[in-house]
Image (cartoon, rainbow, N blue to C red):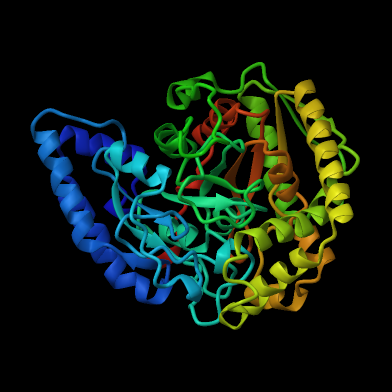
Amino acid sequence: MAELHYLSLDEVARRLKARSLTSVGTTGAILDRIDRLDPKLKSYATVTRDAALAEAAARDAETAAGRSRGPLHGVPIAVKDLCDTAGVTTAAGMAIRRGNVPAEDATVVARLRAAGAVVLGKLQMTEGAFGAHHPSIPAPVNPWNEAYWTGVSSSGSGVATAAGLCFASLGSDTGGSIRFPSTMNGLTGLKPTWGRVSRAGVFPLAESLDHIGPMARSALDCAIVLGAIAGADDRDPTAASLPVPDCVAGLAAGVRGKRIARPADLSGLDDDGRRALDSAVEVLAKAGATMLDVALPAGFDRAALDWGPLCAVECAVAHEATYPARAAEYGGVLAGLIDTGRRLSGTDLARLQSRRAAIKGALDRLLASVDLLLVPVMPRSVWSLEALAAAGRDPETVARRLRYTAPFDMSGHPTLTLPGGMTGEGMPVGFQIVSRAFDEASILAAGHAYQQATDWHLRRPPLDA
């Protein structure tokens, strides 16, 4: 049997319900593991030990009284440090916000608590959810190999979930920040449709691009968390009022009869990524899907290049209260993004918005012609820290890295990232499944079908060897 800390969220929930585990005992064990491993891994910004144990005791009392709040009841999780938590610092990876203590929870945090989850603390992240950690804040360390990137910006979420320091986490994705750390840490990560999950109480990077979603160990676990956090919210008028389907029940639908396409042109994709995608095609075909090749729409690559200035101008708005007035307190990478946004002209913005509308429409049409789209996460499947530093941060280099992620933030379509292989150096490799807007149920069902036939999602980093 797997160690407690590496069980799936679903398995822990079932054991808690059966009372073969207690929430206090489970929470205490994970907190002790955090104490032991996180001084090296640096995944947590804040650990709320006393509050977590108090929440766990309350959940155990409810269980003893025959009450259950659902499949998250008593399960220890953690949230990215841009989600407001009442009475607990929410810094969003920024030195300038170290004194920010919200009076109320973000909607997603409040919904997790209402569903019975035990919140262990706040997970470290890049400054302002962009591409680099603040110089004064140590970056999380990849538990598979410390010489490799953790992904951004939900770096702490990826590390903590992979290392057994929580059973699931919340991340945010503006250009790939659920998908990159999910891939680099061997996790399953869901970027829901824009508007499926409320952003109320979540510090923005770029409001029209930001998505909040779960990072976990399986499609099933992601479906459980999504069920708790999704839905309309009076605090966020952009949160869609559409009903939220039961994605856990929908996992049984599988992929039989589905038409799943992948890009015919995968030039530039490395061998590890190609093997993962080829294997996924084979597995999904055996599960009953019809596999097709399609051309990605014209403008797909331009969308990744356009993402940068669009993100920049919205980021400048998000920081106008403190930038440039307190620019010296910002790290250079985030400051550079804000400066780019402040220089953008109205006519430049209009052109960007026009091209964004065009790529969204083109992807809508493509996804209307098939059921699902299978794509890589990155052209280069894994990145060492050395290679990442050598590559630099010029717009074209960043756009190439975002080729398969940013267009779906621009369009708002939901994507599920799955582990699908390992490199010769022992690092996980991922791929994405994309669906039509508000059809998270289909990508989760496809991901579950894939994971029923493979064991990549059961691989764990060698921390306990």
